[in-house]
Length: 320
Image (cartoon, rainbow, N blue to C red; front, side, top):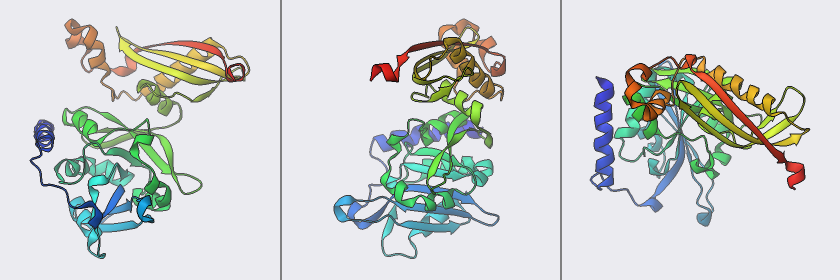
């Protein structure tokens, strides 16, 4: 099975890199250090767009490089054919995959990262609606100054590969072009061994955030006209139920805890309705009920009960 073979290859590569058995890196000062790489698929080729990072000590300006080929490897190799400097992918901390490539070539893209001598498995993975190259080019200045550690939604190529290699689904954050040309959060995507499965937006996207334990700082407008800001999110699955504990503070009016709970339930039900378990909810349940694994494994997630507990602790105005 392709998945089992990739899982074995992943383990071997990780061991080899850890033992220093792979080819050593080049001298950094001789290279154009790529900080973000975008990959797309056209009707006839694979294209890549790279943005170089900025070394402030050398007064550098970000550069946008482009390559094209019949494969991702060939396109990346073409990045340096027209210039005197050699693009180095070992500093790439974000891989942006365009929607077209994600639908039919995501597996090959991640497999390329696994086998490439420079690209790292801790590179953060994103799906971009439309063309990833165009979106990255339009936000080159900002992208050159950012690092992947700034995004709490980050999911690495390595952890995504691990799930796909087992035939499971994985959540990947989605980006889209903003009004000022920069890349902005645009929800989540579900991916599997076959590629991009679906996009989650609005309530489903927020539900994906809650399942990932994210959402701190999110301002939630409630039905009574009040609004609260989430200060803590804890979500876990046990005994046939997704359980979520939301803690918040008032930012407008006096919010109702019952309304906050109702909001959380809607978001979670919206993402679970897709029937895709991208978070290993069955394994999470089985950790506390190993004797019930045969019943729990691959159980329909849309049938899980959703139980949300909300707590509102004061307000930003009173705190300040």
